[in-house]
Each structure stands twice: as structure tokens, then as C-alpha cells.
Amino acid sequence: MTKKIWINEREYISLAEKKTTFAEEIATRKRSIDFYSLGMYLPNPDPVLKKQGKDITIYKELLSDGHLGGCVSSRKAGVKSLEWGIDRGKAKSRQTRLIEDLFKSLPINDIIDTILDAVFFGYQPIEVMWERAGNYILPKDVVGKPPEWFVFSQENELRFRTKDNYINGEELPDKKFLIPRHCATYQNPYGFPELSRCFWPITFKRGGMKFWVIFTEKYGMPYLIGKKPRGTSKEETDALADVLENMVQDAVAVIPDDSSVEIKEASGKSASADIYERLLEFCKTEVSIAILGQNLTTEVKGGSYAAAQSHMAVRQDIVDSDKKLVANTLNELIRWIFEINFGSGEPPVFSMWEEEDVDLDLAQRDKTLTEAGIRFTKNYFVKAYGLEEDDIEIGAIPQPQPQQFAENRRAPFPDQKALDNAMDGISPETLQNQAEGILKPIIELIKKGESYTDIMENLVETFPDMDASVLEEMLSRAIFVSELWGRLSAEQEA
Image (cartoon, helix red, strand yellow):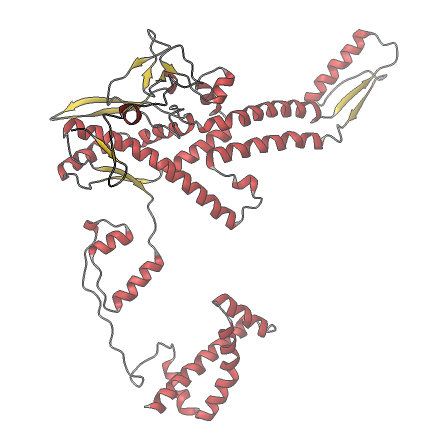
């Protein structure tokens, strides 16, 4: 049957008639005006590598820098610290258990670390070694291989450079190499290496460090100037110079009594030294921004809370992006395992997540609703709190306590007998005056305050000469009078 593409509800185009237009690829490298190649392989279009005339190994040399290495480790740690698991989905339980047992036996943490190298080098070939295990064919090991051993063909297919075929490389078998890539495109199947952004900052940093050390050696120590009488022979002058050179190290010298030594400090050079320091700080800032997306410690002096929140938000976005790269690569491995051993069907899925603390606001809300008589299911606790269903056992829901009348209620006040005695000895008129004198200004302050902190600040401003102990006593009296007033009002209403 001829395939058709419907343009609207009445017109269609046959693919057989328009094969050249719809079924064939038109924009290819061979037909483009700006692509020239002498072989089958596609050169890496990275501008840094092209300008240097080297391969990707120059990026590996950058990792010896302490600051860059720390940034790379920090970015990887954001993903490696996540929890991971196998989601069954629509797969059979037997198939899911097979994948789970396999992943528990593999060094997943090392594999994740290798996959993340694709972020920094653009791509990372990973070879899968298969073996027969009972009735199944499963990966025995998953090992990352040096990316400089591989090239991509004009069809964007990975090829292995060998001694016999170093230029174009050899074709690789199916389901043998995983190829995690970072921001790869048709034009650039090698991906974008984040370390390319760090090449020049690290190069300038190393050069600046070298000149800073020379500057420090030259101007960091005082000058020693030796003086000899006019007409002194060259041998005696050289001998004094050697003595002064040793004096720089030992601070001890013996010279003739007709000679002198003057110590002169290299003043006015601090501004020149600051130039090197600013250069190094700038290079470190560029590296931090390239790898981590920001540089909190250098860009924001003092590290405000708002800046720290922005820092964590940017870091979380980067972690989420890297997490997807890891999940996509390992899910491709799972699909290979599934296709080899089970053929058709939907395989389980590898996923990563961050273990979160219990939401206290949500827990308090659920506690209040539970005390009100609402009963939650296991499924709710699994979704709301990220718990496992086997870890939950729904017990009896505590019933709400019946509300007591005012005359039978016993307030949880520490001195109930004092309250009862005070009620018997105070008339309603006296209590009214006490309440207006003590409670009224405090109640007004409470109404004006939007939070506990505002209320306490208003109390201090209203009673500036009152120390903390007197303020606490006044509040205690207010609580005492309010409790009496409430009890008396309840009895009068009864």
C-alpha cells in the first residue's frame, strides 16, 4: 500500500510520487558547500582543538589544576549523591527483578562517574562486555574508554581508531558501545565539552602564577647593596657579591671593615602585585562560572542568604540536566538487555531522585486532619512522603476528645489552687480594673504586631526601661488575670 501524507481533509501527497522530496535526506554533508573531507571520518569541530592542532587529551591536562578539579568534583558529586532505583512501570515483575539484581552487582557509582565525563569532554564512549548468565545474556562489566581513541563518521556513527586504520577508524558492532554526549548536534556529533570554556582561563592562570612567583622572588625580599672603595679589584667585588647572595638566605655575612652593606626595601610595589592577584581571581571566577554556573564566593562578597539561594537554584538546574544524561544512558542499556533477552515489551526504567526531608507543614496539616477524624490511605502516604508501601501499617485512628463544658474544664495552669482562691477573693469590679490596666495595652500591641518578633519588639519599645525579668512578670500577670477573667465569665454565663 502506498504511503500518503494528508495535507488537509481533502488533499494528500503520495510518498511514491514525491520520494525525492519527502523520503530522502536532502541536506547532507556530501552536498553542502562548506564541508570537505579526505576520508570517512568527521574531524572534531571544537574551535579550541582546531586552533591548537591537538586532540581532546589537552582537556585532560587541565584537570591537574586544583580549582578546576574541585569544581568538576563538586558538579559530579551533585549527581552521585542522588538516590537511584528501577521503576517497574508496565514491565513484568520477573524482568524487573532481573534488572534490579544486575544493577546491584554492577559498580553503578563508578559508571555514573564515567557517564558524567561526557559533560566535560563532550562525549564518552563506554564499552559493554556481555556474558551468558544462566538463560540470559547480561553485561559483565561497563567500562569507559578514552574518547581520543574514537572518531565519528560522516554519518555521525562512532568508529574506533586502530593501528591498522588510524585515520577513518573501524566500524563498531551494534549494542556494544554506549555514547553519552553533551549538547551534541548533527553538525557536531562530538558534543560540546565544558572544559573548552576553561582552556584559556587555566592557561592565563598558570602564566599569571608563574610571573607572580617571579615578581615575589624579585620584590618580596629587601635589596642588599654592598659598597666597596673605588678601585677595588673585580675579584674582591665578586667575593662581596657572593657574600651578599648567601646573606639573602642566611641573614649572616662577614665583610671587610672598609666595606658596607645597605638594606633597601622594595617599596611601592604592592599595586603591581595586586594585578597578578586580580588576574588569578578573574581566571578562577571564569572557571567556576563555566563548570558550576556561578561563583558565589568571588562574585558576592560576604555571601548573603539571597545569593546563597540563587546559588542553590542554579546548582539544582545543573544537577537535573546531568541527571537526565545519566538516566538516558542507563535506560539505553536496559533497553538493550530487554531486547536481547525478552524481545518485545516495555522495559523497566532507571530513575534518580533526591531524598527529601519530611515536609513539616504537610505533616502538621495531616496530623490536624487525622485528629479531626479523616483517614488517609497507604497510597496517600507513599505519594505525599515518598515512603515505601511495605514500610507503612495503618493503625487505629485516634478519635477526637469530646469537648467539655466550661464549668467542668480544668485549665492546664500550673497553680490551679491559686486560681480558685483568687477567684473567691476578687470581685468582678476589681478584676475588670485589673484587666483594663494590664491587658488592654498588651492586647493593642498584639493587634498591631504581624508576628511574634514584631510583638516582642513593640513590647520593648513601649516599656523601654523595663528589664527582661520585669517584662516576663508582667506577661505572667496578664496571663493570670486573663485566665481568671475567662473562668469568671464562664461561671457568670452558666
